[in-house]
Image (cartoon, rainbow, N blue to C red; front, side, top):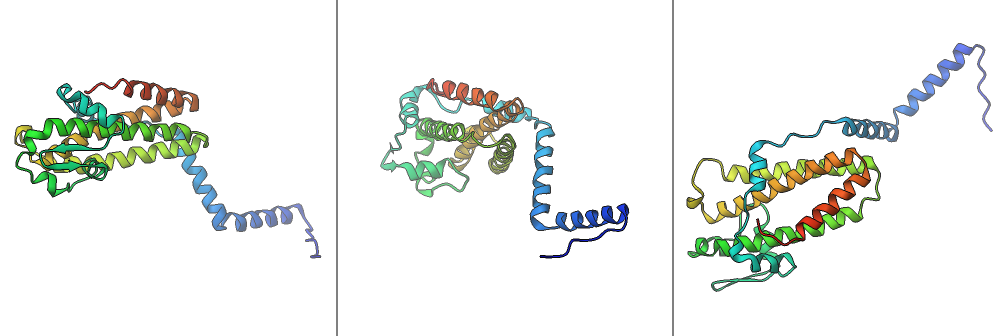
Length: 233
């Protein structure tokens, strides 16, 4: 057994304790804990982001036509097949079309692309909503984590969406009429509209999280109910 330290004065004892705490606080695990605690405090008091008017406007723009409502609903319900002229689109194709550019040349090089855009946009719209509903249900089932971890995840989603929208905005920079958009620009446009909606949702989620988990759950369930109305906008 080690010998117990002997302190001759109260001041010596306090100094020894201070030195010991200083050594412990410099350990990597202690530094990591301190950073994490500071991060939690920062996110708890961090002001909500302000949504630019351009993003709000894009989030409200129609993404597809009611003329192809049946196509939207098929993809919304989980189907992932669409025939355009001689091309058959499947799940992997829709995943690529709902991602960042560049897009598959087998589709964007079609001479009839603009003629089929109304139907294709309805299918992409349905696919995007279907995918988001699945993600939202997953988020709802994962709300057994701490409030601080929830805030961390919500901010992570917001930043990721902001960066994603910037990519689409860079593709569409300028004032060219939508009637003159190339296939890649049309695909970037519908993805930017959807990402703008997700950004509005993300800020609403951050606001709800400030009031607690119950409020966030209510926001999630209300949104799932709204998206389940199967309307094309």
